[in-house]
Amino acid sequence: MPHAIADDSAEIAYQVRGDGPPLVLLAGQANSHHWWDPVRDGLGAGRRTITLDWRGTGASGPTDRELTTRRLAGDVAAVLDDLRVERADVYGTSMGGRVAQWFAVDHPHRLGRLVLGCTTPGGAHAVERSLEVRRAMVQPDRRAARRALLDLMYTPAWLAAHPGPTTVEGDPSMTPPARRDHLRASDGHDAWDALPRVLAPTLVLHGADDVLAPAVNADLLGRRIPGAHVEVLPGLRHAYFHEGEAVATPLVREFLG
Image (cartoon, rainbow, N blue to C red; front, side, top):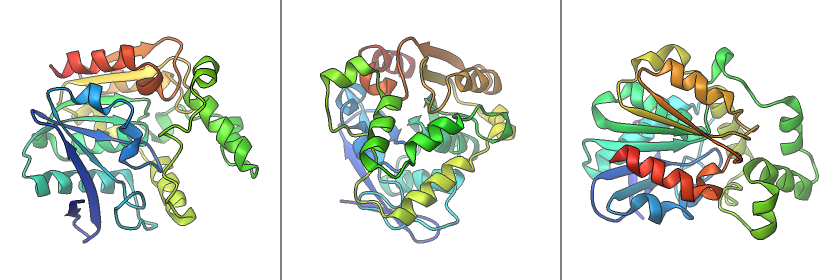
């Protein structure tokens, strides 16, 4: 598996599939590139899709306490450098959407179109998940915590028909310190002041019933990023891109052209 070298010499594993205009897919917190497995073929038809394993996941190097979403955006740029890709479209979901915001701000010349899914601007202006949701995700009973996470990701009807396992439950190879570093990076994200500098055409997608990253954040991003278009998808939760693939993927493909 190829690796890019970040500016601090960290090794970032990446994966490339298909041919055509490049599309970078950025996964959620504590997940590797497998986050995209169920929908990658649909999104990537006629495109060259590029994914990466965040630090601390998959085949990438370890994390550290200085991990931030802005540093992770630099890792995305390092992958494009290694591939000699000058410009790409970027689709980031959850923490990947937070990273994508910084990529758009710090590397505007390398970005074609931007899709932000189930994510927030961070900081004091974002609407955070409730304390009840946070507690449910970190309860000591691991089976109950997994069920709580799945309930945040998918509707009960979908879970009944798809008992899993799913690809959005976190990378099982991660160490506890790496998980904490990811949580710290995601929770520390705050791009609010920088978002008006995003120049790329932007689509914001969100499940209307998402309480992991409350759906009101989609409107906040839409108002903060110049010219952004917002689509809130009824009846879907955090993993809208998977459960609602039949709706979400065509929206993304149409937007990207």
